[in-house]
Length: 293
Image 1 (spheres, one colour):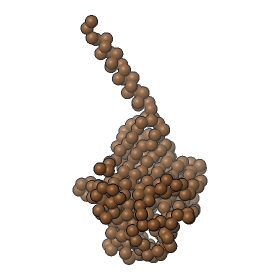
Image 2 (cartoon, one colour):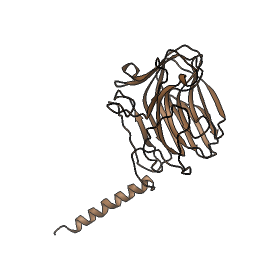
Image 3 (tube, helix red, strand yellow):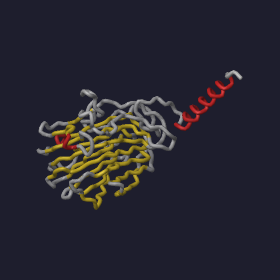
Image 4 (cartoon, helix red, strand yellow):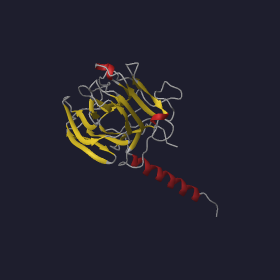
């Protein structure tokens, strides 16, 4: 059975912290549903579009996430997807997911995965599918909102593919945006993200050419923060359907880990492990000293 949980794995200061995962086995998407799903909200302005869990979209287990766009649209009416708002922080974020192109009219462009930050138009890293093909591309914005698009030579078939969309050093002038598919690095590029914070990510149909029609399936989604640091609070249930940046508050950018439901203080995980071992040793020695001859 596939695991489905919000979790924080803390084994050492250098290890990844699993902040979010969803294999869609509840058959639901948002926290308002029963049983509760994992996503903050859905944006589905066109009633003819379909965004739902479906057995037909499952790579493994019972359910996956299926997006169907049969009508296209213009402006915000072309956007359909599931979003997760996160407490604003600077650092690293990797979004990993399985995806397949079930059907496409081979026209236009669709952006099925986007990581958002506090920049103009908010998208700092996104996976794009450019027709014909579709051919995979990586694009995103820097701290000024200037956008870069880098096509790859990978053209997708109708099978499942594992995507890893990564942002490293968000909040610094030494940021790195990269895309790996099926374990093969496709694009790595340097970005100036000075002062930028991560605020949310989404799956589905982001902005792009409104002529795109088709069906996309997603499964086994996870998001990890790899800076090995401090608690960033809990998931926010707000909405980003308007495409604007989430409220980052007044706190200065800091290099914090993306953790969910953990009030772990400011000490690194290794300090907590050492402290726990010392406590166990002290109790063991104390109990030995109290034994009768």
